[in-house]
Length: 584
Image (cartoon, rainbow, N blue to C red; front, side):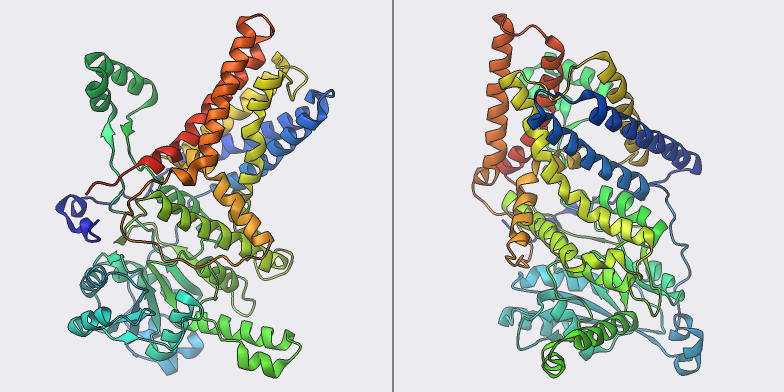
């Protein structure tokens, strides 16, 4: 596959969606439905634990009720996260350093030009791909009082890359080792280039011209440590209209069926965003609303950092680590001052450390507008590797810094938001129970509840209704269905990440490939395919038992049948991704 496929006109013509717009009344409506959902959830779980457990099958009833309880904690955290859109007020771009420093530093920095370093960390990428990134960066608009420089942080020491950078007039920042990977490369470069601000981008990031004019103004507040801009992928699979696909397969009847389906469920495309790569849900909903708690975290690419903040926090942390060491002299020799924390998830780890810094309460900003475009993983192997690194890095981070949640430094809102990121990954554990529950019922005819009675549905259905309506309001205009399916489907990847962290196996930093690999990826979804097959067998078995009169209660069968189909559809989403072949 040609790594420069995204230069084709059809990709250049694609434009990012504008940030989500919600009125104060809409947000109040979400809060109403969210709070009612929480109250109904508590009511439902109280009923589940006190009045609905099947006392003759506690081996089944208790794990399911426990899983429901753990998932409900996630619901509470989501409502808190989505509570309010509170964007940081935009300000005019600063002209000199005196516009962005503390009052006691004005005399020193009076009328000093602002030096902005754009960093492009690379490791064995295609030089031509990187050249396109450099060309886009050179088109970034600046002010006359700004000194914008471009640096290639090259850990690959490639002769072809060196030749390209010399031709483009961009300095390479080299080092003798790859210690700390990307974080180490940035730390090393900061000591060499001396910028007041750094812009971190990936090798495939093409900046939009106005990024600095639109974001540097936030730093007029001297407590703002970094600004994260949303990542947007210009190469997401667009899909094909449902009526066109069904007409090709089933003729006019298929087209009519598709039109009827879409009248009920809305416009649908077949093959749209196959890998659930669309980051709008993450940036425009989750991260953006964390501005309300000063808890949006850095996501690496397309972020702008105040270097003095990174230095201050890193030096303070280095001193603490040295003082805590048994052999301080050895620690002084071995410990680096990590401006960006040396970790698989260096971005969120650094964010946590900066937010927790006690000497100065730094702020973060999620800028709502897209200011660049990037490439997404377009094969399941690359995608799975990336998601495993995200999961493993976050889980490992929490195990290392768990004590911070019980100390001063982070505010309550920040603690809840960082904890929410970790808690979302624990869903994979509870999902195992939720995925196998309908299968157990279908094979054994044993219910985890006393009965699927009217009392049970009176407690369950209102909670589900208010919860779904609340999420629909919060995410209005953003397609979250695909992400919801993949949340279920990727549970084996997340469980492996938990297992590797538990046995202290290092989570390796792997650079995400920028082109689709060829091959068969079904081996990566063996567990999901096995579960789908198990569901099919369980459904056939339970249906046969009903038909021959061995079972007489249809309510439990109907509930678990719908539950099984829902799970099968979600699991099938990742099987589809494994079968997908990218066409330029």
